[in-house]
Image (cartoon, rainbow, N blue to C red; front, side, top):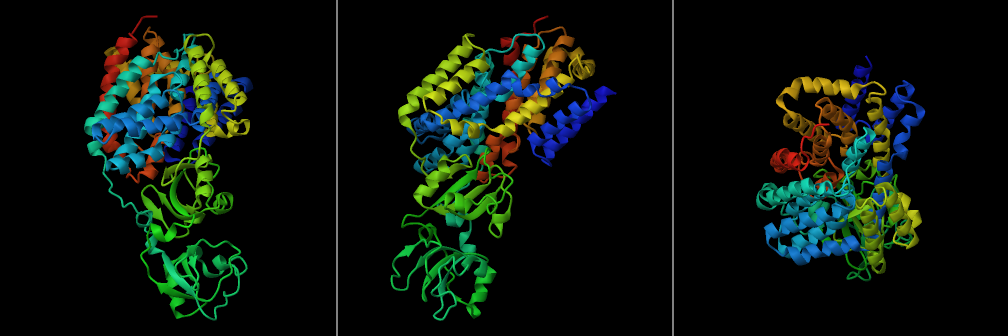
Length: 597
């Protein structure tokens, strides 16, 4: 009965992960709590995930990655693409994927994608190449690059931890390199030679106002001669509440050639012309009377909303944003960043009316208007990722060599076995803080705590499935072996890889690794073989999420910014998944033979 109870927990968790009814980290907390309340695991075992070396290492990698970003190391790497890639599509695609892959081998995938994202638009403009054909290779390259090292992606660390828990030696830093390089090489060649043709070449207008259809709900109004608004400031007249309109720019009747962004204290005068944002229907009513008169149904462009110290920019909501689940109004975006949010785009659809009350999600793209200083503040915040029309804030380049040296020390110490990888990570974090590469107050914000809680709270499920508790892993492995064991270990490994790849499309890759690694070990032991090839296949399967935009946060980010459709991912990624399957079936047994226990 316990076996079916554990399978029930797994099934419910998978459904919640797939349909996003509840946030994944909350689902994981529910799994842990269920195991604790039913007594399947004890208190120490239930909370052991938070002290697990793999979880500590993941935390350290977030902070070390932040050090590389904040000191400009990642920005410098992004600039190399422009110099090396040139304008040839094949070389450009390969350079993008190799660059982000190398970065992802030593920093978290989403961080590598976020840093390189603005460069993709610059490259697209200079080379006259569709930016959509760069963003998808950028995301896929980050996932492939993470396969090459132990710290490249959480699933690699988690399957290594599962090996150690079962009494085997864990994977070392570069044990993933042979298989990871083979998979990445095939991925780069596929995307450069074939995959890029399957990506839609969205030739969007250079004008952001046209892309977001701002002309449909922006217009110009004039303050009437005897208007009740004349002589009052915007804040005094409660302009926004009274009219339902937001003033973006204004022009004085006495100086019609000068436009400026008004402050809340700006006093309105008769004859002032205002560019306003609001409901078109409400604006048309003003023709018949009221304090404002419709001046012209103008087709606005970027120039009408920029200049005089004001710029437009696209920013995407970051995975670690404090605004997730809160609306633009609830998050007080205007007050915190001093920018106006003009439009919100979600999964290819632009929301114009009442979008400020819509809860924000990862990958949502906002069109904002503000001063260069305000936009730079958004650029360095953890709430947003730059998309385009926005330069990076200056980094602390003087500390870049120090950050690189610290990262190298941590990697070498772990790779040589001088220090356990978790200890090497903690040492690197301490050195980053002491040298000022990362401020102490920023370290805690740089960690993606949702991922940490997801991993730590799912780990007790692996403990519950062990032989010391319910034995569900061995029981399930036995049934799987009865179905596939007669066909040999290669078929068993193929089944594990395919199942891991499929469930990772609808749930966190870290959760998939935590769930399947103990089963993989039990299956290997049941076959009388060492578990290394099976665990390697699970690790690779957990990071090859190319079929859906929701399989990994890197995909979610480019999905929103690139304005892709859902179908674009399986159209490009399905063949890549098939190719990687065959590479895994050939390369993994060569590097990690099926060795008897």
